Length: 252
View 1 (cartoon, helix red, strand yellow):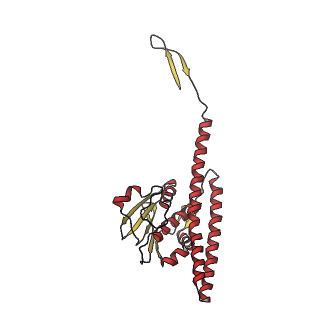
View 2 (tube, rainbow, N blue to C red):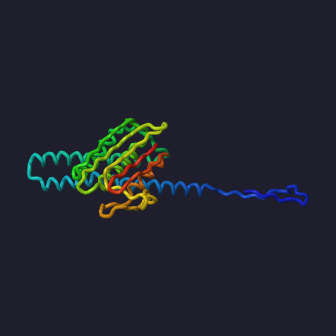
């Protein structure tokens, strides 16, 4: 910053200036940013491990209640699959942590059908319990995106539909991809409880916002999903009616 010292006729006699060392300020901003990134990572870890660990717990309960040996054998096979999924998720999270330690987050070629496979494996127990069905219509079969983040987005969308399904009504979750105006668009729609957007629309993606009582919800999933999508230049919107269902549209 500099200011001139003027003579009576308006001419500049000399300049007075000052300068500041902004290195400390830049380091403080960088530290704040990295703390925010690790907080985001911690939320991903806590949230994404709930699915496979919950599946393992449910399958163990089923094994304890099962009397038929063939049924038990099938449940043990599913338990092994859920255990492998948990291990794969941990490995992916460790890989993500390594990436987060670098300055750039790499984009992967993500196969959307593989996203469904991974998500269904993570939520196997919940899907069995709810007799849920996932249908797909992929006009776009793959996209460029950080794999762990896209898996987290798919997980959050599907787990929300399972969690907020209507009592006695098997959830049907339809996932569609398309290329619209040069943007990959994903939609996740279900036949669940739905949300009163006139009442809750403004709080839809806020942290710790819960719209249905008694569902063991922490109000983290949608907030985290929106943050992940917007971090990479995308947008998310929602359409919903109580007792009809909910549709999320994501544009990348």
